[in-house]
Image: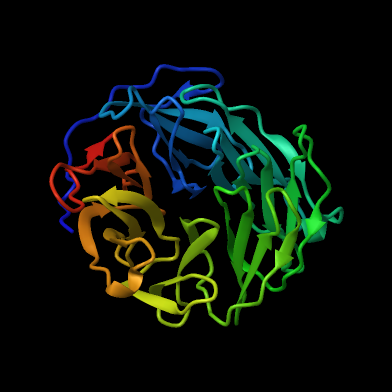
Length: 373
């Protein structure tokens, strides 16, 4: 695979305010959000998200395939210690936040949800999903929430509770929140990885000090069943997941002992991928390269440099060759396909600006120079 430096080129024009957002062309992002923060809308335009201490930032392509962008637009997001993103087959973007209110040793902590229906349209108000705990001290120990959205459009919110088990709350067929369900587990550390398969079944993986715990729905929108534990040690916060075959997920994480990235499909072996990651998850994407079904991975190395690799999907054991992209980032990189089917890499640079690289012409995976948005 060939990659080229993204020392870049052009700067996009400022955004036009829309809905509840305000133009914030000089606002620097302070952190990336969790999950797939670069998403493709139904109209073919990409949207990128990041955050500051009290707002959500959003950049939007002006037309499918780019290269121009607008933004960042800023949307109020006060008191959120974590924000994660999930997108359903309907292309709606769901934002989940862990909200902290009040000062002192026992603030009020709960989960909130916001929604963007269409590319470039307003983000809704943050509405409460609640907490599985009525006791404030227990609620204060909630982990960061994640979500998965199946073909039915029903949102499944997963969060680690005060005891380290996993709780699920999901929407019913009419969009109302059902009660919290305890799907068990213990001593969860770091964020949970969750995904919805094309079949509609949702599965999730979470790590503890000595093992990984996995849950799988028996059918679309059905009950979660705990699967046999996996004897691995996952560095907290490094989990990501990708559907690599019908109803089959491949999980990626950094081994806690070595820091090395690995891949694993339940029932198989742990496959070393080389490369030592920072404290965040690798971005993973399926893409067609030279006529082959491939998996593209990007991760932030210990020195902040973004590394890129690709392999045949479910053929990691054949080896990966990590290539430096020439970009350094704060937080985690993101990958997506644009409207023309090109691989797009997005990062938040040390200056807090969005930088975007696109796949260039030719064989393999060659990235064009990055553009600072």
